[in-house]
Image 1 (cartoon, rainbow, N blue to C red):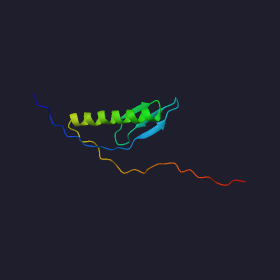
Image 2 (cartoon, helix red, strand yellow):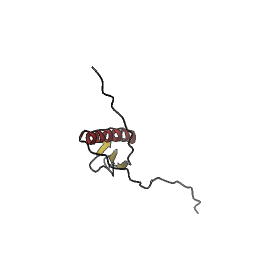
Image 3 (cartoon, rainbow, N blue to C red):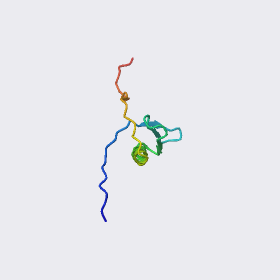
Image 4 (cartoon, one colour):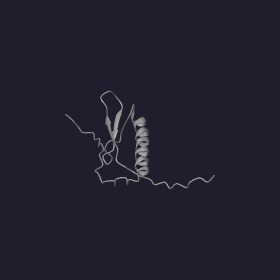
Length: 86
């Protein structure tokens, strides 16, 4: 029995990790409306995000649909400074 040689392509999408009121993080992908997940902590949310993204893209491939192009988005980060106060 021959095994199929399946090509793999690496995709990279922006994920938004939004702290949930009940704790944990809701995760969404702006380029993939409806592709959402949740994690009890940030590490679990990252793992769940990778899993749901892979499943979402595999489903698109099974339907012969092209994944959306990644849009350039601003990078959001935190900047910490120490300021002298009176």
